[in-house]
Length: 490
Figure 1 (tube, helix red, strand yellow):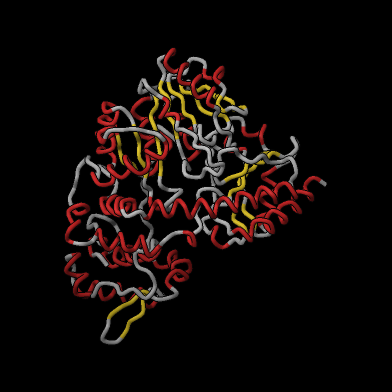
Figure 2 (cartoon, helix red, strand yellow):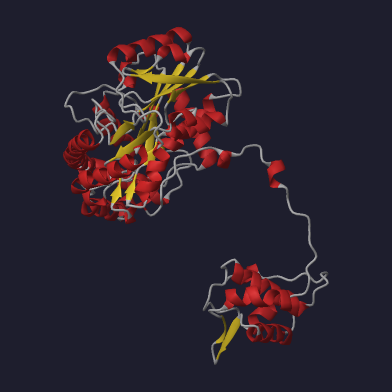
Protein backbone atom coordinates (compact mmCIF):
# COMPACT_ATOMS: atom_id res chain seq x y z
CA UNK A 1 0.00 0.00 0.00
CA UNK A 2 1.46 3.35 -0.94
CA UNK A 3 1.72 5.57 2.11
CA UNK A 4 1.29 8.63 -0.13
CA UNK A 5 -2.44 7.86 -0.10
CA UNK A 6 -2.62 8.94 3.53
CA UNK A 7 -2.48 12.45 4.87
CA UNK A 8 -4.16 14.59 7.52
CA UNK A 9 -5.15 18.24 7.62
CA UNK A 10 -4.32 19.82 10.94
CA UNK A 11 -6.62 22.81 10.42
CA UNK A 12 -9.71 20.60 10.13
CA UNK A 13 -12.15 20.48 13.04
CA UNK A 14 -11.86 16.69 13.21
CA UNK A 15 -9.46 15.14 15.70
CA UNK A 16 -6.36 13.39 14.41
CA UNK A 17 -7.79 10.01 15.39
CA UNK A 18 -11.04 10.75 13.51
CA UNK A 19 -9.12 11.81 10.42
CA UNK A 20 -7.07 8.60 10.47
CA UNK A 21 -10.24 6.53 10.76
CA UNK A 22 -11.90 8.54 7.98
CA UNK A 23 -9.07 8.15 5.48
CA UNK A 24 -8.74 4.42 6.11
CA UNK A 25 -12.47 3.85 5.69
CA UNK A 26 -12.40 5.89 2.46
CA UNK A 27 -9.54 3.71 1.19
CA UNK A 28 -11.58 0.58 1.97
CA UNK A 29 -14.69 1.90 0.21
CA UNK A 30 -12.70 2.79 -2.94
CA UNK A 31 -10.99 -0.63 -2.99
CA UNK A 32 -7.57 0.90 -2.36
CA UNK A 33 -7.58 -1.36 0.72
CA UNK A 34 -9.37 -4.60 -0.27
CA UNK A 35 -10.33 -7.25 2.32
CA UNK A 36 -7.39 -9.08 3.95
CA UNK A 37 -4.98 -6.34 2.89
CA UNK A 38 -2.50 -5.26 5.59
CA UNK A 39 -2.66 -1.63 6.62
CA UNK A 40 0.58 0.24 7.33
CA UNK A 41 2.07 -0.52 10.71
CA UNK A 42 1.36 1.94 13.50
CA UNK A 43 5.01 2.99 13.51
CA UNK A 44 5.09 3.57 9.72
CA UNK A 45 1.75 5.41 9.74
CA UNK A 46 2.82 7.63 12.62
CA UNK A 47 6.02 8.52 10.81
CA UNK A 48 4.14 9.21 7.58
CA UNK A 49 1.55 11.46 9.24
CA UNK A 50 3.96 13.01 11.74
CA UNK A 51 1.77 12.13 14.70
CA UNK A 52 2.37 10.06 17.80
CA UNK A 53 2.27 6.30 17.47
CA UNK A 54 -0.25 6.19 20.31
CA UNK A 55 -2.69 8.31 18.25
CA UNK A 56 -2.48 5.83 15.37
CA UNK A 57 -2.81 2.89 17.75
CA UNK A 58 -6.01 4.28 19.24
CA UNK A 59 -7.46 4.89 15.76
CA UNK A 60 -6.63 1.34 14.67
CA UNK A 61 -8.18 -0.20 17.78
CA UNK A 62 -11.33 1.88 17.26
CA UNK A 63 -11.59 0.64 13.68
CA UNK A 64 -11.08 -2.93 14.88
CA UNK A 65 -13.84 -2.50 17.45
CA UNK A 66 -16.19 -1.32 14.68
CA UNK A 67 -15.37 -4.30 12.47
CA UNK A 68 -13.22 -2.54 9.88
CA UNK A 69 -9.91 -4.11 10.92
CA UNK A 70 -8.76 -7.33 12.49
CA UNK A 71 -5.58 -7.70 14.51
CA UNK A 72 -3.33 -10.66 13.79
CA UNK A 73 -0.75 -11.60 16.39
CA UNK A 74 2.82 -10.70 15.36
CA UNK A 75 1.53 -9.59 11.97
CA UNK A 76 -0.37 -6.34 12.44
CA UNK A 77 -3.76 -5.04 11.39
CA UNK A 78 -5.65 -6.24 8.28
CA UNK A 79 -8.81 -5.11 6.54
CA UNK A 80 -11.60 -7.43 7.64
CA UNK A 81 -13.81 -9.40 5.26
CA UNK A 82 -16.81 -7.55 6.66
CA UNK A 83 -15.30 -4.10 6.18
CA UNK A 84 -17.85 -3.01 3.58
CA UNK A 85 -20.76 -4.10 5.78
CA UNK A 86 -19.16 -2.24 8.64
CA UNK A 87 -18.98 0.90 6.49
CA UNK A 88 -22.74 0.79 5.98
CA UNK A 89 -23.64 0.10 9.60
CA UNK A 90 -21.01 2.09 11.48
CA UNK A 91 -19.92 5.08 9.41
CA UNK A 92 -22.79 7.31 10.43
CA UNK A 93 -22.35 6.34 14.06
CA UNK A 94 -18.57 6.59 14.39
CA UNK A 95 -17.48 9.39 12.09
CA UNK A 96 -17.92 12.99 13.03
CA UNK A 97 -19.63 15.37 10.57
CA UNK A 98 -17.44 16.53 7.74
CA UNK A 99 -17.75 20.03 6.40
CA UNK A 100 -19.37 19.88 2.96
CA UNK A 101 -17.59 21.66 0.11
CA UNK A 102 -19.13 22.77 -3.16
CA UNK A 103 -18.85 20.10 -5.85
CA UNK A 104 -17.53 20.82 -9.32
CA UNK A 105 -20.26 21.35 -11.91
CA UNK A 106 -18.61 19.29 -14.61
CA UNK A 107 -21.49 19.57 -17.07
CA UNK A 108 -20.98 23.32 -17.32
CA UNK A 109 -17.27 22.84 -18.01
CA UNK A 110 -17.46 20.14 -20.68
CA UNK A 111 -17.20 21.34 -24.27
CA UNK A 112 -18.23 17.98 -25.71
CA UNK A 113 -20.46 15.14 -24.55
CA UNK A 114 -19.38 12.05 -26.53
CA UNK A 115 -20.91 9.75 -23.90
CA UNK A 116 -24.34 10.96 -25.02
CA UNK A 117 -23.88 9.66 -28.55
CA UNK A 118 -25.48 6.46 -29.80
CA UNK A 119 -22.83 3.76 -30.18
CA UNK A 120 -22.55 0.11 -31.08
CA UNK A 121 -22.77 -1.94 -27.88
CA UNK A 122 -21.86 -5.59 -27.34
CA UNK A 123 -21.82 -7.75 -24.21
CA UNK A 124 -18.35 -8.04 -22.74
CA UNK A 125 -19.08 -11.65 -21.87
CA UNK A 126 -20.04 -12.62 -25.44
CA UNK A 127 -17.85 -15.73 -25.06
CA UNK A 128 -20.43 -17.10 -22.63
CA UNK A 129 -23.20 -17.20 -25.23
CA UNK A 130 -23.49 -20.30 -27.46
CA UNK A 131 -24.56 -18.35 -30.57
CA UNK A 132 -22.60 -15.07 -30.82
CA UNK A 133 -23.54 -13.58 -34.21
CA UNK A 134 -21.69 -10.35 -33.43
CA UNK A 135 -19.25 -8.49 -35.63
CA UNK A 136 -15.65 -7.62 -34.89
CA UNK A 137 -14.67 -10.59 -32.75
CA UNK A 138 -12.57 -13.53 -33.84
CA UNK A 139 -12.60 -17.26 -33.27
CA UNK A 140 -9.47 -18.01 -31.18
CA UNK A 141 -9.48 -21.57 -32.51
CA UNK A 142 -8.37 -20.25 -35.90
CA UNK A 143 -5.40 -18.27 -34.61
CA UNK A 144 -1.90 -19.84 -34.85
CA UNK A 145 -0.89 -19.15 -31.28
CA UNK A 146 2.37 -21.14 -31.50
CA UNK A 147 3.61 -19.11 -34.48
CA UNK A 148 2.64 -15.88 -32.74
CA UNK A 149 4.38 -16.97 -29.55
CA UNK A 150 7.54 -17.71 -31.54
CA UNK A 151 7.50 -14.19 -32.99
CA UNK A 152 7.07 -12.76 -29.51
CA UNK A 153 10.09 -14.74 -28.28
CA UNK A 154 12.18 -13.51 -31.19
CA UNK A 155 11.20 -9.91 -30.54
CA UNK A 156 12.51 -10.29 -26.98
CA UNK A 157 15.96 -11.40 -28.11
CA UNK A 158 18.95 -9.11 -27.81
CA UNK A 159 19.00 -8.80 -31.59
CA UNK A 160 15.67 -6.95 -31.63
CA UNK A 161 15.80 -5.40 -28.16
CA UNK A 162 16.19 -1.80 -29.29
CA UNK A 163 13.20 -2.18 -31.62
CA UNK A 164 10.82 -1.93 -28.69
CA UNK A 165 12.83 -0.54 -25.78
CA UNK A 166 13.81 2.70 -27.53
CA UNK A 167 11.49 5.69 -27.57
CA UNK A 168 11.08 6.41 -31.29
CA UNK A 169 9.20 9.63 -30.55
CA UNK A 170 7.11 9.85 -33.74
CA UNK A 171 8.76 7.16 -35.89
CA UNK A 172 7.40 3.71 -36.67
CA UNK A 173 9.17 0.35 -36.80
CA UNK A 174 10.85 0.36 -40.25
CA UNK A 175 10.49 -3.41 -40.47
CA UNK A 176 6.73 -3.17 -40.01
CA UNK A 177 6.44 -0.36 -42.56
CA UNK A 178 8.32 -2.51 -45.07
CA UNK A 179 6.06 -5.50 -44.45
CA UNK A 180 2.89 -3.42 -44.79
CA UNK A 181 4.27 -1.98 -48.01
CA UNK A 182 5.28 -5.30 -49.54
CA UNK A 183 2.86 -7.89 -48.14
CA UNK A 184 -0.40 -6.10 -47.37
CA UNK A 185 -0.76 -3.18 -49.75
CA UNK A 186 0.28 -5.23 -52.78
CA UNK A 187 -2.75 -7.49 -52.16
CA UNK A 188 -4.96 -4.48 -52.76
CA UNK A 189 -3.03 -3.05 -55.68
CA UNK A 190 -1.85 -0.08 -53.61
CA UNK A 191 1.66 1.25 -54.26
CA UNK A 192 3.13 3.45 -51.54
CA UNK A 193 6.52 4.73 -50.50
CA UNK A 194 7.71 4.16 -46.94
CA UNK A 195 7.18 7.83 -46.04
CA UNK A 196 3.55 7.56 -47.17
CA UNK A 197 2.62 4.96 -44.52
CA UNK A 198 1.70 5.63 -40.90
CA UNK A 199 1.12 2.92 -38.27
CA UNK A 200 -1.91 3.57 -36.06
CA UNK A 201 -3.66 2.02 -33.08
CA UNK A 202 -6.21 0.35 -35.31
CA UNK A 203 -8.31 1.92 -38.06
CA UNK A 204 -10.27 3.86 -35.43
CA UNK A 205 -7.17 5.79 -34.44
CA UNK A 206 -6.42 6.57 -38.10
CA UNK A 207 -9.94 7.92 -38.65
CA UNK A 208 -9.80 10.09 -35.56
CA UNK A 209 -6.47 11.58 -36.64
CA UNK A 210 -7.86 12.35 -40.09
CA UNK A 211 -11.01 13.93 -38.68
CA UNK A 212 -8.96 16.10 -36.35
CA UNK A 213 -6.58 17.16 -39.13
CA UNK A 214 -9.04 17.76 -41.97
CA UNK A 215 -12.40 18.79 -40.50
CA UNK A 216 -13.22 22.28 -39.27
CA UNK A 217 -16.49 23.58 -37.86
CA UNK A 218 -17.86 24.41 -41.31
CA UNK A 219 -16.30 21.59 -43.37
CA UNK A 220 -18.99 19.72 -45.35
CA UNK A 221 -18.47 15.98 -44.80
CA UNK A 222 -20.30 13.11 -46.52
CA UNK A 223 -21.17 10.14 -44.30
CA UNK A 224 -22.58 6.86 -45.60
CA UNK A 225 -26.14 6.21 -44.41
CA UNK A 226 -26.31 3.52 -43.20
CA UNK A 227 -22.68 3.63 -42.24
CA UNK A 228 -20.01 3.32 -39.60
CA UNK A 229 -21.53 4.92 -36.51
CA UNK A 230 -18.21 5.66 -34.81
CA UNK A 231 -17.12 7.76 -37.79
CA UNK A 232 -20.50 9.52 -37.80
CA UNK A 233 -20.00 10.32 -34.13
CA UNK A 234 -16.46 11.61 -34.70
CA UNK A 235 -17.70 13.96 -37.41
CA UNK A 236 -20.62 15.12 -35.28
CA UNK A 237 -18.10 16.37 -32.70
CA UNK A 238 -16.27 18.38 -35.37
CA UNK A 239 -18.88 19.86 -37.74
CA UNK A 240 -22.62 20.26 -38.24
CA UNK A 241 -22.24 20.37 -42.04
CA UNK A 242 -22.93 16.67 -42.60
CA UNK A 243 -24.34 15.20 -45.81
CA UNK A 244 -25.83 11.76 -45.31
CA UNK A 245 -25.26 9.75 -48.49
CA UNK A 246 -27.58 6.80 -49.11
CA UNK A 247 -26.48 3.42 -50.44
CA UNK A 248 -27.85 1.63 -53.50
CA UNK A 249 -26.80 -1.62 -55.17
CA UNK A 250 -23.65 0.03 -56.57
CA UNK A 251 -22.49 1.72 -53.39
CA UNK A 252 -22.57 5.32 -52.20
CA UNK A 253 -24.98 7.55 -54.15
CA UNK A 254 -23.02 10.39 -55.76
CA UNK A 255 -25.95 12.81 -55.92
CA UNK A 256 -26.10 12.77 -52.10
CA UNK A 257 -22.53 14.06 -51.76
CA UNK A 258 -23.70 17.61 -52.56
CA UNK A 259 -21.11 20.20 -51.49
CA UNK A 260 -18.96 17.78 -49.47
CA UNK A 261 -15.22 18.35 -49.33
CA UNK A 262 -14.51 15.12 -47.45
CA UNK A 263 -16.14 11.75 -48.15
CA UNK A 264 -15.87 8.60 -46.06
CA UNK A 265 -16.63 5.35 -47.86
CA UNK A 266 -16.24 1.59 -47.50
CA UNK A 267 -16.18 0.44 -51.14
CA UNK A 268 -14.97 -3.16 -50.85
CA UNK A 269 -18.03 -4.17 -48.85
CA UNK A 270 -20.05 -1.30 -47.54
CA UNK A 271 -20.42 -1.06 -43.77
CA UNK A 272 -22.88 -2.50 -42.78
CA UNK A 273 -24.85 -3.54 -45.91
CA UNK A 274 -21.93 -5.42 -47.58
CA UNK A 275 -22.65 -3.82 -50.97
CA UNK A 276 -19.52 -3.80 -53.14
CA UNK A 277 -19.06 -0.53 -55.00
CA UNK A 278 -19.18 -1.11 -58.75
CA UNK A 279 -16.28 -0.12 -60.97
CA UNK A 280 -18.52 2.43 -62.67
CA UNK A 281 -19.36 4.04 -59.33
CA UNK A 282 -15.71 4.00 -58.22
CA UNK A 283 -14.59 5.85 -61.32
CA UNK A 284 -17.52 8.23 -60.96
CA UNK A 285 -16.58 8.97 -57.34
CA UNK A 286 -12.97 9.71 -58.31
CA UNK A 287 -14.13 11.94 -61.16
CA UNK A 288 -16.45 13.79 -58.79
CA UNK A 289 -13.64 14.29 -56.25
CA UNK A 290 -11.33 15.73 -58.91
CA UNK A 291 -14.04 18.06 -60.17
CA UNK A 292 -15.09 19.26 -56.70
CA UNK A 293 -11.57 19.32 -55.21
CA UNK A 294 -12.68 16.86 -52.51
CA UNK A 295 -10.84 14.26 -50.46
CA UNK A 296 -11.93 10.63 -50.05
CA UNK A 297 -11.22 8.44 -47.02
CA UNK A 298 -11.35 4.76 -47.97
CA UNK A 299 -11.79 2.33 -45.07
CA UNK A 300 -10.77 -1.01 -46.58
CA UNK A 301 -11.74 -3.15 -43.61
CA UNK A 302 -11.75 -6.93 -44.01
CA UNK A 303 -9.96 -6.68 -47.34
CA UNK A 304 -8.87 -10.31 -46.97
CA UNK A 305 -12.39 -11.80 -46.95
CA UNK A 306 -13.02 -12.15 -50.69
CA UNK A 307 -14.80 -15.39 -51.52
CA UNK A 308 -15.66 -14.99 -55.20
CA UNK A 309 -12.07 -15.38 -56.38
CA UNK A 310 -12.18 -12.21 -58.49
CA UNK A 311 -9.79 -9.49 -57.32
CA UNK A 312 -11.55 -6.25 -56.43
CA UNK A 313 -9.08 -3.36 -56.55
CA UNK A 314 -8.99 -0.86 -53.75
CA UNK A 315 -10.29 2.60 -54.61
CA UNK A 316 -6.83 3.89 -53.73
CA UNK A 317 -5.30 1.77 -56.52
CA UNK A 318 -7.40 3.69 -59.09
CA UNK A 319 -6.51 7.11 -57.72
CA UNK A 320 -3.90 9.03 -59.74
CA UNK A 321 -4.37 12.42 -58.10
CA UNK A 322 -3.61 11.46 -54.49
CA UNK A 323 -7.13 12.28 -53.31
CA UNK A 324 -7.81 8.92 -51.65
CA UNK A 325 -6.55 8.44 -48.10
CA UNK A 326 -6.41 4.70 -47.47
CA UNK A 327 -7.12 3.24 -44.01
CA UNK A 328 -6.47 -0.42 -43.20
CA UNK A 329 -6.43 -2.61 -40.12
CA UNK A 330 -5.05 -5.93 -38.93
CA UNK A 331 -7.70 -6.27 -36.23
CA UNK A 332 -9.93 -8.62 -38.22
CA UNK A 333 -7.13 -10.88 -39.49
CA UNK A 334 -4.95 -10.96 -36.37
CA UNK A 335 -6.87 -9.99 -33.25
CA UNK A 336 -9.06 -6.99 -32.38
CA UNK A 337 -7.34 -6.48 -29.03
CA UNK A 338 -3.97 -5.87 -30.71
CA UNK A 339 -5.19 -2.50 -32.09
CA UNK A 340 -2.84 -2.40 -35.06
CA UNK A 341 -3.75 -0.44 -38.18
CA UNK A 342 -2.16 1.74 -40.83
CA UNK A 343 -2.85 4.66 -43.10
CA UNK A 344 -1.59 5.47 -46.60
CA UNK A 345 -1.58 9.08 -47.77
CA UNK A 346 0.68 11.61 -49.55
CA UNK A 347 3.87 12.38 -47.63
CA UNK A 348 2.77 15.89 -46.64
CA UNK A 349 -0.36 14.47 -45.03
CA UNK A 350 1.53 11.65 -43.28
CA UNK A 351 4.03 14.18 -41.90
CA UNK A 352 1.23 16.17 -40.29
CA UNK A 353 -0.53 13.04 -39.03
CA UNK A 354 2.72 11.77 -37.53
CA UNK A 355 3.22 15.06 -35.70
CA UNK A 356 -0.39 14.99 -34.49
CA UNK A 357 -0.09 11.36 -33.36
CA UNK A 358 3.03 12.28 -31.37
CA UNK A 359 0.98 14.74 -29.33
CA UNK A 360 -1.48 11.96 -28.46
CA UNK A 361 0.56 8.79 -27.94
CA UNK A 362 3.88 9.27 -29.83
CA UNK A 363 3.65 5.89 -31.53
CA UNK A 364 1.97 2.49 -31.07
CA UNK A 365 3.90 0.22 -28.67
CA UNK A 366 7.21 -0.84 -30.20
CA UNK A 367 6.96 -4.45 -29.01
CA UNK A 368 3.61 -4.88 -30.77
CA UNK A 369 4.97 -3.35 -33.95
CA UNK A 370 7.98 -5.65 -34.05
CA UNK A 371 5.99 -8.82 -33.26
CA UNK A 372 3.55 -8.01 -36.07
CA UNK A 373 6.46 -7.25 -38.40
CA UNK A 374 8.03 -10.64 -37.66
CA UNK A 375 4.68 -12.40 -38.03
CA UNK A 376 4.28 -10.84 -41.47
CA UNK A 377 7.90 -11.44 -42.52
CA UNK A 378 7.92 -15.11 -41.51
CA UNK A 379 4.73 -15.86 -43.43
CA UNK A 380 2.50 -16.29 -40.40
CA UNK A 381 -0.01 -13.71 -41.60
CA UNK A 382 -0.24 -15.19 -45.11
CA UNK A 383 -0.89 -18.63 -43.63
CA UNK A 384 -3.50 -17.17 -41.29
CA UNK A 385 -5.27 -15.38 -44.16
CA UNK A 386 -5.50 -18.65 -46.07
CA UNK A 387 -6.82 -20.43 -43.00
CA UNK A 388 -9.40 -17.73 -42.31
CA UNK A 389 -10.45 -17.73 -45.94
CA UNK A 390 -11.18 -21.45 -45.90
CA UNK A 391 -13.04 -21.32 -42.58
CA UNK A 392 -14.99 -18.15 -43.38
CA UNK A 393 -16.00 -19.40 -46.81
CA UNK A 394 -17.67 -22.45 -45.23
CA UNK A 395 -19.35 -20.29 -42.58
CA UNK A 396 -20.47 -17.79 -45.22
CA UNK A 397 -22.08 -20.58 -47.21
CA UNK A 398 -23.61 -22.18 -44.12
CA UNK A 399 -25.13 -18.90 -42.94
CA UNK A 400 -26.41 -18.10 -46.41
CA UNK A 401 -28.15 -21.47 -46.58
CA UNK A 402 -29.56 -21.13 -43.05
CA UNK A 403 -30.93 -17.65 -43.73
CA UNK A 404 -32.49 -18.80 -46.98
CA UNK A 405 -34.21 -21.60 -45.06
CA UNK A 406 -35.37 -19.73 -41.97
CA UNK A 407 -35.46 -16.08 -43.14
CA UNK A 408 -36.23 -16.30 -46.87
CA UNK A 409 -35.85 -12.95 -48.58
CA UNK A 410 -34.53 -11.16 -45.49
CA UNK A 411 -30.83 -11.22 -46.42
CA UNK A 412 -28.75 -11.01 -49.59
CA UNK A 413 -25.23 -12.43 -49.71
CA UNK A 414 -22.45 -9.98 -50.53
CA UNK A 415 -20.76 -10.47 -53.89
CA UNK A 416 -17.39 -9.61 -52.35
CA UNK A 417 -17.53 -11.41 -49.03
CA UNK A 418 -17.01 -10.05 -45.57
CA UNK A 419 -18.03 -11.70 -42.31
CA UNK A 420 -21.59 -10.40 -41.97
CA UNK A 421 -25.07 -10.65 -43.44
CA UNK A 422 -27.30 -7.58 -43.49
CA UNK A 423 -30.92 -8.52 -42.81
CA UNK A 424 -34.11 -6.57 -43.40
CA UNK A 425 -37.40 -7.62 -41.90
CA UNK A 426 -40.90 -6.26 -42.61
CA UNK A 427 -41.18 -2.49 -42.14
CA UNK A 428 -43.13 -2.84 -38.88
CA UNK A 429 -40.69 -5.42 -37.47
CA UNK A 430 -38.66 -4.42 -34.40
CA UNK A 431 -35.15 -5.94 -34.45
CA UNK A 432 -34.46 -4.54 -30.99
CA UNK A 433 -37.22 -6.71 -29.57
CA UNK A 434 -35.81 -9.67 -31.49
CA UNK A 435 -32.36 -9.05 -30.00
CA UNK A 436 -33.81 -8.92 -26.47
CA UNK A 437 -35.74 -12.16 -26.85
CA UNK A 438 -32.93 -13.98 -28.66
CA UNK A 439 -30.47 -13.02 -25.95
CA UNK A 440 -32.45 -15.08 -23.44
CA UNK A 441 -31.87 -18.12 -25.65
CA UNK A 442 -28.14 -17.51 -25.98
CA UNK A 443 -28.29 -15.85 -29.41
CA UNK A 444 -26.48 -12.52 -29.89
CA UNK A 445 -27.38 -10.27 -32.82
CA UNK A 446 -26.88 -6.59 -33.61
CA UNK A 447 -29.93 -4.36 -34.28
CA UNK A 448 -29.24 -2.24 -37.35
CA UNK A 449 -30.80 1.09 -36.37
CA UNK A 450 -27.54 2.33 -34.84
CA UNK A 451 -26.00 2.55 -38.32
CA UNK A 452 -28.58 5.08 -39.56
CA UNK A 453 -28.83 8.81 -39.02
CA UNK A 454 -32.60 8.44 -38.50
CA UNK A 455 -32.56 5.34 -36.35
CA UNK A 456 -36.29 5.16 -35.54
CA UNK A 457 -37.16 4.66 -39.22
CA UNK A 458 -34.91 1.62 -39.55
CA UNK A 459 -35.78 -0.62 -36.61
CA UNK A 460 -36.45 -3.56 -38.93
CA UNK A 461 -32.76 -4.05 -39.85
CA UNK A 462 -30.23 -6.25 -38.06
CA UNK A 463 -26.78 -7.67 -38.71
CA UNK A 464 -25.40 -11.18 -38.24
CA UNK A 465 -21.71 -12.06 -38.23
CA UNK A 466 -20.05 -15.47 -38.39
CA UNK A 467 -16.44 -14.55 -37.51
CA UNK A 468 -16.71 -15.64 -33.88
CA UNK A 469 -19.10 -18.60 -34.13
CA UNK A 470 -18.25 -22.16 -35.10
CA UNK A 471 -19.69 -23.52 -38.34
CA UNK A 472 -21.79 -26.19 -36.63
CA UNK A 473 -23.44 -23.55 -34.41
CA UNK A 474 -24.68 -21.37 -37.25
CA UNK A 475 -27.76 -23.28 -38.38
CA UNK A 476 -29.06 -24.08 -34.84
CA UNK A 477 -28.56 -20.44 -33.87
CA UNK A 478 -30.42 -19.12 -36.92
CA UNK A 479 -33.24 -21.58 -36.25
CA UNK A 480 -33.62 -20.33 -32.67
CA UNK A 481 -33.57 -16.77 -33.98
CA UNK A 482 -36.33 -17.53 -36.48
CA UNK A 483 -38.49 -19.00 -33.71
CA UNK A 484 -38.28 -15.72 -31.80
CA UNK A 485 -38.93 -13.71 -34.97
CA UNK A 486 -42.05 -15.77 -35.67
CA UNK A 487 -43.36 -14.97 -32.18
CA UNK A 488 -42.88 -11.26 -32.80
CA UNK A 489 -44.54 -11.42 -36.20
CA UNK A 490 -47.46 -13.30 -34.67
